[in-house]
Length: 452
Image 1: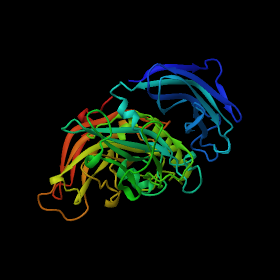
Image 2 (image 1 turned 180 degrees about the vertical axis):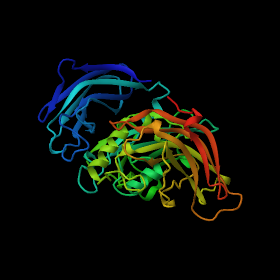
Image 3 (image 1 turned 180 degrees about the horizontal axis):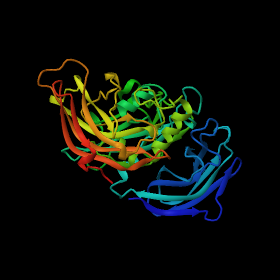
Image 4 (image 1 turned 90 degrees about the vertical axis):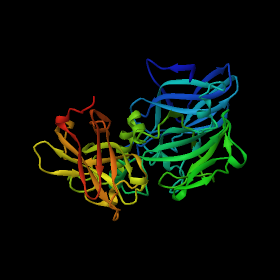
């Protein structure tokens, strides 16, 4: 549990951090542990969706030593940026922030600080293990020195904790990046993954029952390297026991070979369940939809007026976002997958998640998955009459092959601010799809399955 240490608020007038100025916060720790900095700030004139105004770059010093950097990407609105400062002993400490105009977007002149708070997770707290092994991520520098200032920036860090019979555990950290510049094209991202963020596992470590890294023949310490290759970690550690990695590709893969000069230590926000869609983490951090939408608007030519029958990428408010899960016969997912079709009231047209192109369908392993269905401009959740699951064929399957689609965990639209909008559609109906039974209705408006 995070314990409050101290804070500094500016209720009447925010603190403007400009070039050649600094913000200083002193604090005292009674116990050793991992320390959290929660900075509530905004960027005057900032806008992640506008070239030249994307973000502000702030460097954090701790006890007069370089700690990490902070990219403020949420524009002119106050936003809570939470970062780990690493493990600190008990005693007096000083954190100092400086604004780096030369590393910020060209039109950014300062940041506005509303509040700064220090919290701590003590060494004696059982949750400390999830904080102490969170990876330090150096920013990408493939095209220029500070790419994360304007593209594919890391937004949030969460983790899985897989328990083993001998009381050991494997902790896997995943990062949500604002987009991916290479890899799956935008239209396929929306169909296959239901998002344009890039969600990747970056670091995995096996711990004994005392929460310490396992050594010897049972050691597991890995990262997801280029080409999505699981790679043994042989890098260094800093700020305590945090492994050091770097964003090394344009699609969210990392390396333990460091060439960059700026880094981040994101706070792990939650322990996620493998039985639930990864995209549900975005619903818990709904602002991630907005940041990703702004990046897409800035970087790509979006289709307008929108044509729901084409796969071309459009404004993200024109899509129905669907979270579901599937189970293939004997776990064989190479034969086919599941897609979704949507029919609106008083319309005869069906709108498809794959646009009748099997290469757009989700082709991953069984379990939770997400997709979107592009709809006419102005569609409201109440306009939807029926949602159907359908069979997507990859190759000829055995006669007894089937795919079970386990209802709709949630289906929703985005509001004007690009945030998930209620009500959500929910269905517990199960669809059994096969080459012989290619479509099954999962939800109809008169089923009264709409969630709130």
